[in-house]
Image 1: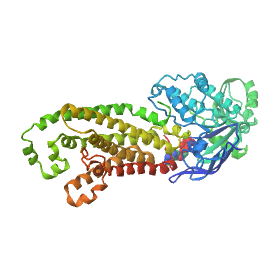
Image 2: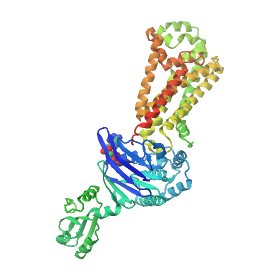
Image 3: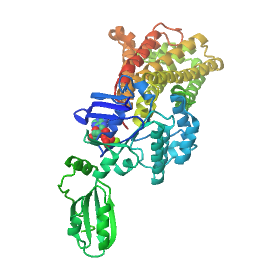
Image 4: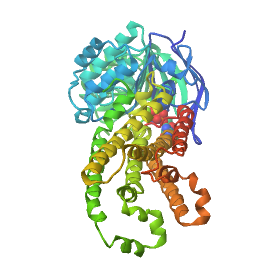
Length: 308
Length: 264
Ligand SMILES: Nc1ncnc2c1ncn2[C@@H]1O[C@H](COP(=O)(O)OP(=O)(O)O)[C@@H](O)[C@H]1O
Ligand SMILES: [Mg+2]
């Protein structure tokens, strides 16, 4: 049985189409990365799957349970971290988790201790006195504590420092290995590709791409600035496989590269490299390049003032 | 304290409850302490006659000659209803709409707890809170009656306290229902308060203007106060208040269960 199956999922807020005809199937025991820019419709999708809002059209089914008709039954099997996690300010972390554990039943408190230990969260502090990052940790713990069959995590790493992010990603990986399914939304590719098996890219309410991480990685378009010790070998670089475009000034070239960059660096290295700056690929570009199917159009990219 | 939503909701209102109960106790004691000097005032009858007829009717000023009548006029006709209703509306609006606006409702709902049961547990917590206020009124007045010679009987007092509690519960449930249906706390407070004021105006107008009188039974204030409320005993009209309060919450359940929960 599919962990998640949506069919023609559509959500309108008044006349605004937040989600349009999303068909999505997610296998159990996998990590699904749901990528999209701000306003793409990630939160809307997540909250439909959590049973908090109803689709205008289409259906969402979780483990065979309809998100509208079988909501209560479905919600028993979900751990949910909202995009903006808020907890009761006047409670301590421990009281808050105790309350949720009582509502859910059968929570093994040793799991809570393990999670708080790994994330470094102090449960004796009033939630109102916690830093933003620590509140987010509490949100992670409440979502994971009952080891639900499905984890719905809406931009979970917001506010977590890099070390904790790493720990969080291993929690996600372990959950999937244990057989739990993870639905993780994000607007940062690097975060998702580190942990996801499959990635879906949402653009203005349309699910544009669903692809395994391996395939997407080879098609990802990246910008890289290489500063050479002397005049850059622009013609040589232009001819390297995967290089889509090139701009340059006296010592620095800005390249748009598709796929792996090993060959590029092998060819460039003998010319004397002073510095390399690689930029996070843009979501827009990933799915544009996906649609181009590796075609040969250039992505126009102005060289910023700092290096021009 | 965190075993279920009902207990947590009780815990959440403990400070408000403490404050309101203390306030009400102080008020009642002050009023009761005044009574002996009012009773002994010789010019009382003359003073009464100076009030216009409508005022005498609305506040039962003729009753000022007995302790029961004095307390009816001073406390049970306006002040105590006001206290109970404000408390009820405040708690009712906060229960679901407040939680939704602050953003804590999302996680709470993605549990085996259904919107319907959430509403019922919040309603139960509100009734418990109002009952604590009611107990405060009852005990304080019973003791004051002995101390200051008000001569208010236990059964009479119980009935009048019940009337106050029912006013708090009815308008509290109204605010709870509007909050659950709309998700907006200020709307819940505003609409419930407006309806409470309208109900009072209908009641007051019915006391003074004969042509309004036939409509007066529609007002919860009439249903609560018409028998005194001190002195009348348990009135059958109380049942209307129970029915209306239950209807508000029951009507809200399907609407709350079916609507979108607002994102924070
Ligand atoms: N309650 C709402 N009313 C009106 N528009 C909304 C509402 N919620 C979201 N939207 C709109 O729907 C679109 C998708 O929003 P959202 O799902 O929050 O995107 P994301 O989580 O990817 O940033 C956005 O354009 C947003 O402005
Ligand atoms: Mg979002």
